[in-house]
Image 1 (spheres, rainbow, N blue to C red):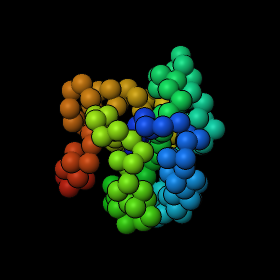
Image 2 (cartoon, helix red, strand yellow):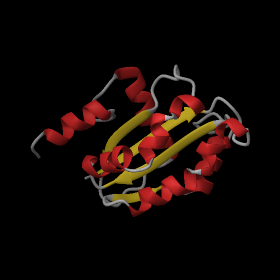
Image 3 (cartoon, rainbow, N blue to C red):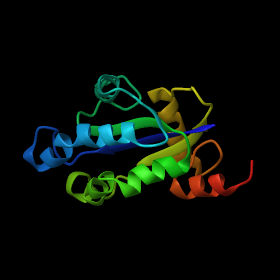
Image 4 (spheres, rainbow, N blue to C red):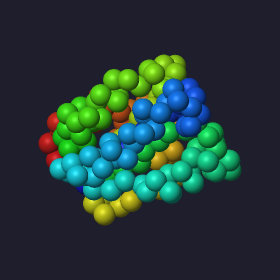
Length: 153
């Protein structure tokens, strides 16, 4: 099994606003580091993600300030190494500059069979389930991921 990751947030300002320029201008850099990271498997393409984010009839609601990522990793250790031990962490630490702090749930994780590429609809179903019902094998956050990775198979 691999680990799927979906994160979502709403920017405080439009994508072309100078107040989010440092974030927007470094997305390609951070995504390139992810793609080269050990354990990285797949990430939804920028075009597909942009289309999902701006589709007013879609599951993300069409807010033009949405910023999200959907990716798959071999395991939790690989995802954590990228998130906490690369330049990604510097941008994560600055998230308060770009996102409001009261947005609630921002991340959902779940296991997928190797080779599976989740859809945005699948990601939002997992996200909604986690938000409504809390952590389970179906959908979990960082704490639940650590608990699930420590269990013997």
